[in-house]
Image (cartoon, rainbow, N blue to C red; front, side, top):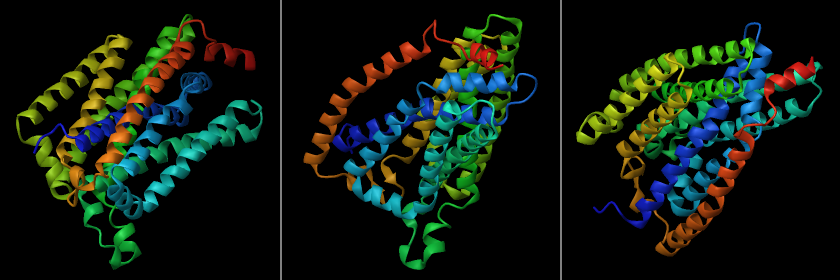
Length: 355
């Protein structure tokens, strides 16, 4: 079967969009994790740095999630229907978490800095940032295990809509997803803090996130081993795809090299190198899952070709994607250049002003 077909091409765009959401939006969720776990004498500055890092860009990062949903709905409608029905519960809870997180972050940012309500908004933002990635990972785990495709909707609510995703394997993938997002955020925040540090206390602040990045690196490794262990029984096809064949060895070598490079860069305080290595490491994890699942969009019932919409729809979708990327990518580049460039007000300055 040829790889370069129109459905496969759009499936690749779908995976690329999901990759972008993980690297950008996922790091925003990870920032919420560190907001929840802020501690020590610099906890308010830690939270201020998180807000400073994600504040200007978190809404724009959701464009990738919207693109993923639209592409699945438009290009692979039978798969969308299956996912929306079988994973209705975790997907609904995940969307509630997305809304709660965004609303809470906005209210916390613009509310009074000194009342109890602002503290509650902060707690809501942090908890939603933890729960939502877990639910996203649970959906991925349920899909990879094949339970979504095998679910018999005639067997009742619990069997079809609960038992398909409430499994040790799916929950382990949810934990793995959360730790990956926290790891990305910690690595990004070391660079954010390092580029904005000019005083001894600020140097100590980016050291806080360096320690968190190193700890989350180890946690990601442990969670990855747990997922691989559970996949032997729960998702044998995915495990076989990740452990057999020449491409699997190459993937593991690249992932290991990126992980070790990130560890070395964090240890030696080369934060830009650490960010680049972490991006490669996490991207390899996502593309490894996508390739191991190929050619299925819903294992083991719907292939990419079998779930594809009519060719006319796919051609129009591809044109829309090309035109949209021509607008989206330069716009995001400009947004990041403005709000991530030098000379913007720093979180530390605002914390001092609030005092």
